[in-house]
Length: 103
Image 1 (cartoon, rainbow, N blue to C red):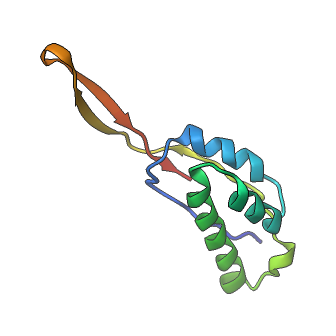
Image 2: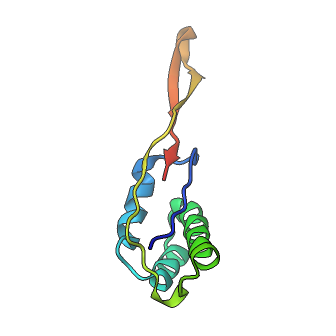
């Protein structure tokens, strides 16, 4: 039995999220929560909330024991890119891509 949780349209690059996901993959839930709490990365806020949601789903929907849970699988993919324009010298415009993530 497995409990799942999803995070869509997070306003952070998938490359930044994947670095943190590699730290918690195949680890017990209490260890993963400690890593997310004490790692100084922007993705940790999103992932800590997502992990807590998955734990709550396991506990409330499937009556699982929280002490035996672990992070079996976690992945991130690219979401839609928000395209913005930055004015530059001599009337030119550079495009800024604001990336989003699905996890």
